[in-house]
Image (cartoon, rainbow over all chains, first blue to last red; front, side):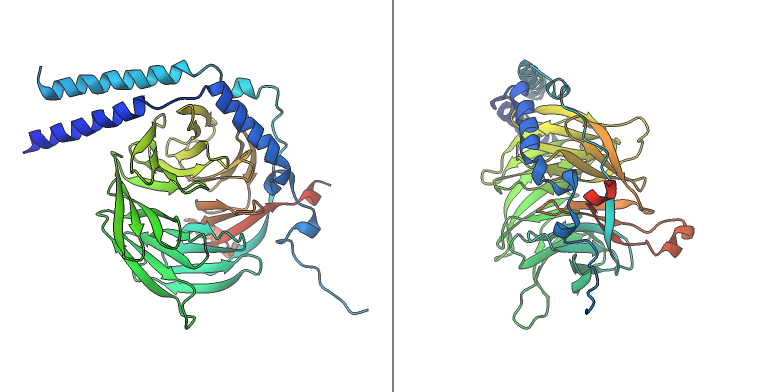
Length: 68
Length: 359
């Protein structure tokens, strides 16, 4: 019966909301600062951010060798 | 008051509680926190390789953990494993169903998976004894299309589906271990963080949800988008999630403060986001859009700092390699025949930064 299944579904919704309402939340100032710090700490290791010199770039076209 | 009415009232009250709790910790904003930080300089990525071989729309790609190989799925009915350094095709796997929408590379490199309108997730063993790549398992239980899949290991995989659920599978037995139900619309994509303990899903109910894999609970629901969430990824520190939506914006949601910290949008951008990936440090967010562009955002300052040029086709998928060195994009056929002479249909492009470009 659709009435009963609606009730079951609604109970699940309420149960889920109760769960989500109960979690601990960290202050945004802390969260934002941590995000910023992470970005700064790893900036130098981020090749898309800092670029690569050609000899460490594995995707750079290879130069041809020639016999001397 | 009937029980249904009582439950509705309780639901509304709980929603208000959650809103209040989020407000209570909102003692700052991300823009304020980074106000003294400069925007990153203009980012210019150069196309280094073009992976040609697919004969129809490329729907998905996924890097292997070795950062050299990647797998792509096309509606030409093939999964191709590429060596991105040589552009050689390591494997070209014919699929039973050509209506593929997603693919994934196992962290071990031993398997790949794909699925789509067949509602199944097919697992392929790349390291079979005789060298042939064969279907190892066909995971069937979803009642809707397979939109995304991600391996946790060689024995477990998570799938998201148009049937509004995500499933955790035991690959060996081919059976579902856990159902993650709660989304009210098609699940469009999922992402797994480095510790494999949780995952996030984006859906057509405009929300993103964070799930605990072991106890199957949804611990966070993030609202704010005004349309389908098509793309989702973890911020590299595992504490935040970035999403891309048909509402033309990307958002960053912080998991620990349980709220949106910033939106990446521009009045000139009016089309949906199809794909999203962060750079290694998280400072850059690369997002593919329906208008053929990939926009590069400064994740902290929420400013657009670059565009991936050279795309004449809709960008359907994007991935940054695990070592952060390269970004790979997959694109669709262009609808305009005038672009086809450039040979740029159905290609995957590998882009990376080269410092020398600026000298």
